[in-house]
Image 1: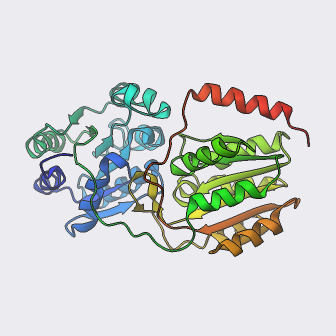
Image 2 (image 1 turned 45 degrees about the vertical axis):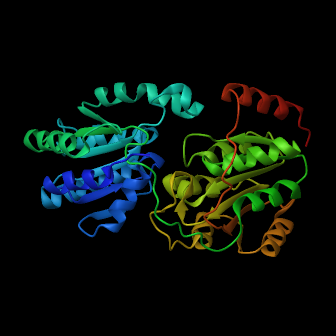
Image 3 (image 1 turned 90 degrees about the vertical axis):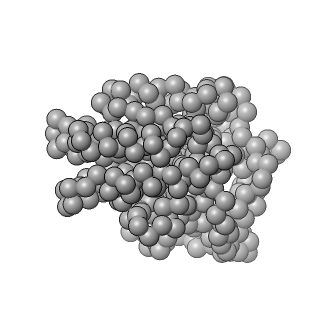
Length: 375
């Protein structure tokens, strides 16, 4: 853990350079920094559904105020930035100056998960291709001096820049977490897993949902499971592509509220195609739990109304084990497109496992089991 209050030093550098508009998507390496922003009234702080929308919000701020905004993200979110950065913000288009602050997952490749390793290796190259001069901060950096100088150069040139943040730079987030109400997500996944027959294929969104499904599947080995370890927000589209290709009778997608909001357009496509025997389950804990428990961009969404407007046939709101069993009973073997929204605590086991091995091998094993399915 960092011995210095690097979060405080970073905020001082921003204030010195008149940067107070902060938006982005939470990352575990930036969790302490996010807490500092949320507690400091000198900053206009907004969590965005995805990184491209954060940049768009920042563009709006700049053209209203002529001030430099800051966008924060994990390096895996750089892909979502490319279109608005190149087609709108780039110096050869609207020349919108902004500061990117990026959590550098996979910086040390052999110490991170498979989905972060290649991203970590490619991050500096990507920033160079995007014409973004880059400062690297780590726990040994003089955060105030280095950040102040770097932002001052940005202000003078009016050309965007990026700061890459190594692990432990800002220490651990020690802010108390709101556990919330409802069910424990892993317990709910266990109930869902055991409820359905072997002709069911389960897809799980990135983060702790996939990790919890992995632990359950390792113990019981009943279902064919696909772990969407990267590509936040894309699990439901992968499940849809699989389902409409006719490869399983029942398909369940275990989704998170933050992931759902990141690529909300997927619901429009699912609702238009209306696949039968497709159950879309959303765990509604109102936070980005896997990266530190920061709130999602809108905690007041009525997911039942949202799913209904997108064309889902059956929608269930679940706040108890009895509710969940009733919803699953009503959904099982129904030729309908179903959504189940489960009110969930912000909670997971301390020693939660990560999927082990090579994702390419997981894929081959998954496909082999698909070829053996009879329905």
